[in-house]
Length: 461
Length: 102
Image (tube, rainbow over the protein chains, first blue to last red):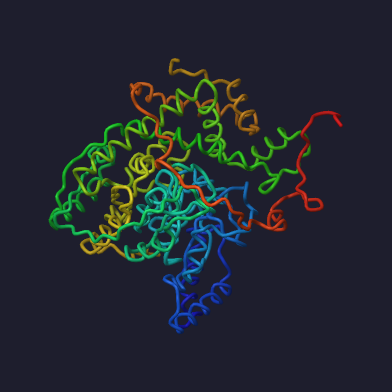
């Protein structure tokens, strides 16, 4: 294998399409990547190599990469270069994986369409007038345009699954605690996970197995060993979420129903289930996420790192000016709302209530999973919107997350797999499973791939 | 407490102080409108009777502690790499007191 032509093939595609797609915030120079590929070739020849040896990986720009600028899609961190690697990056490097670049994202992961990025939006390779989903939109687009073989995203309320669905690739939001958050620049700690994205189920599984596992440096990782289970479609009990189908638009329902029929023909037992409280899941999610964000983003003051306006004065004034100028609108709005909901007099009214709704949803999911193996629904309630369509209407934007936030609230794993297309636009199917059933979800994805044929899909140029 | 919160300039200014974010007057106007819209959207949670439900702060019941033994952190040089203003190995910060207080 010739490293120059191997790496060159990816960079040729990037050369042709990246100007329009804009998946990357920082693309590594080709000669650096070729050098790493040469070392991978040597290791492959010697027979002692890693599980990701020589594989090009796109990394969402909120994951710390030593020596490579990490911006979170924000002016606040536009020139920030981490002096350390996130745990998932260390693990990838140890297995021979090669980082090709840092991908575009909604600013500080706050968004569902990658339109709040300080660096401008990423466009969906399947239709350049539309969004690629978000907040890991750059990672999703990089896979759809085949700029990389694998990608990392992060998912707080659907941010891996939304771009997976909208780019016809796979994305897993892992069970909470199975992937270390050390080095993930925090948005909402009790909700988010770094997760794998890939063009097929086998690749997704390898990447997940490399990044998953307990980490001393993240006290919220669990030491439980995950079972690798093979799932058979015949006899599999699938609960289809009625309330989520209800809120989805007709073309989405139609594509998803087609897949459900295919599953039925393979012998899966489909039954309708209801989550209940779906109406309350979105407010609960946003209250919790904004509250945690107001705390997590308090560290950005332009003193130890980050954007500094150069103003002199009292610390409260200097910080306020730096933060007012460094943060984009969506981020400022969420921080201020979060501060409000945690403040005296409102804490009980919003934050605590949201946590109670969280408890109800957690219990309901667990209860449904007693009578079915997996819970299915469309990943996103609508087709990929046109750029500019939803971004100025906060409530419409929130509503895009209705199917995905539930898994983050409950901590259970959730995967999005390509279900089909409507007028050339990708539609995703979401599956949720019991806590720690991540490998079963991936196995389900692999079995589904066999009957739909939807794997290794590249958006036409 | 009733569900309706008075969202006005005073509230937004208070939130600016709480979150240490300075808004321009135009931004403040826009923030008033949008905060109101979002809080209206959240208001439906008040129609639920949650008196017998325990809040779920975190999906995990417990977390682990590691051994209380030192591990290597960043060197001083690494830690200062991204600081905009440095002096003799220190990070230069803004004034803490207003006026002359020595």
